[in-house]
Image (cartoon, rainbow, N blue to C red; front, side, top):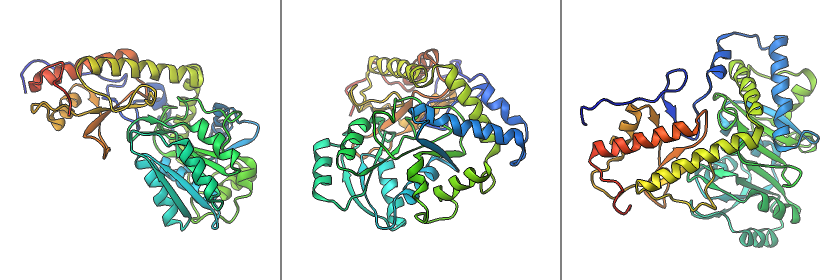
Length: 384
């Protein structure tokens, strides 16, 4: 490493900037509300929680027919609660897979002894609508279809709207994992038919980790009694308890919920999905344009790339060593993600969280500086 001074980027609280798919860089004001304590039965906390649950369906324009059922834990807790509570024991799920989170959903269903059929495409390839149509046409035993909105394995945006309409034409039910898309990519329940969507507090709403939630049609969750395979992940039981008492069945992550409440205020103040998604889209454009100028190649074409996280091919230059590249960016205040692909050797850089165009430009300068320090010439030689 060279001995020249390193400029280090910081968030407004002095922390590194997280260029990841979550947990994310959060605002100082979101962090600040967590310095207080509340009781789980305290009226102030119950009011805060009630406001959170009431406003979430507005993001999908579903406030008339959908309810929010929160689930203590990470986003995967919410996905498992959705799948194991809403798919009955005699149900069968067509799982659309083009990354790690589709595989995880299938594993959840397998452990829960729910019958599945998988339709898998490569991590850089969206599911083919004609193929889905044929599968549903040829297998009337399929009751549900599961898909991931933005698969962060690659950053691909799957055609959720078209899939939802296709599933509805076949009279099947549609379940969505929108973990890294919710709040940034549009999802309109008035136009896209679906039974439920799962997301979490620590993604595009820019809260902190610890709360998953399922936004589900009221009539669907009310008909799910007895389906759940576990006590703690029983959506119907959790929903019923809120209907009766307004409270969680078990200890809630109080500080997480209060922070989420503050994050939602900031989300609406920024303009909701349009404002938040617009900022992320600008972040993504700056990142992609700048990395391409340096010679990096993106995995995905523009029409498949979501403004959430971007996958880049590893350079072929022997001077480029990913761990040294990662460490160099970390020293400069930027944390990125290694790749998760099987189709290519890669790494990922996120565009979401409390990040702005100036932060993306600073990240690009850090990338250039690290490459120079490693002795990697830019623009890069042709990537592998």
